[in-house]
Length: 425
Image (cartoon, rainbow, N blue to C red; front, side, top):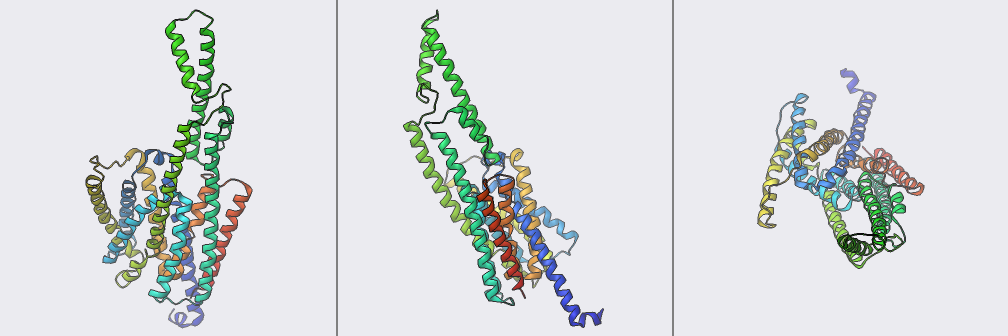
């Protein structure tokens, strides 16, 4: 075996095996990281309006438990850099939840993944001076990957805005009745929209039936023997209904609805801006996320880092909850306890934490074998996975052109991955 190790062919073969393991772990990390945010969009979580800090508590708990499991395969070692990395992650994870809630999964993850690619590459090449065989080729690979990610984000955002615009038009149009709106809403773009659409259909059908019944009772009340009270109530009912519907049963736009719509649009724009700012922070912090691991390599290597990280995440979460409660009490004057929505939130949030922890473990192995400059950008291919969830599960992309654009963008990303691999050391 000693002779084999000294042989250049054996060394090259060993290097290829190590690199292959790194690429495989990067692929697994992309799958786990691309799927961890999916439970955040479940209808139950959206309806409950779960506080991001409460959701992060479940994620941190899952991270802490899985970090203890790492001691089954590696020796116990502790490093201060694990605490630093955990503090970055806890804050970053909480802000990421806000970003997804404010501007959507596709927009948020597109932005922070693209930024993470460049920031991670700069850390690896400039700060850690990692040996990349072809720096120019790697830079072009990053450009191609980012172009694919950006194109994918445009496709997703246009599809989402088109769906919302259609929904808005259905709600406000003066030329669309309840039955036609109901059939249109039945082809909703996501499970969440399906829930809202069902509510809308019930409301429209109910209004149509009530209007017809009120009109019939009012007409019959003038020709048959009825009490004065019934006639007055019926007339009042007809008047109330006529405020929201015309005599032909079509829905009309009132000034109050128009004002409410304008206010809602402004609020949505504000939310999107906040979400973009949060996603920008997440991208910069996410690109620097593995920096503590590189410094910790002098004390721990690979999966040995996980225990320190898990303990740090528990400590950082406790501090975060304490500071957040101080903020709620002193600034917002909200003295109610933080609602964790255990029955609704526990399973999806813990699943989010487990998926993220699995991705974190795989990314650590990938970076240990490939370096930050190559390994971390490869992990950001998670965007292909997360947007695939939007296409196939949440049905956020509809139409042949949109789906074709999505897969063309995915091919750009994969081509960039191949280029980046060829540029590695």
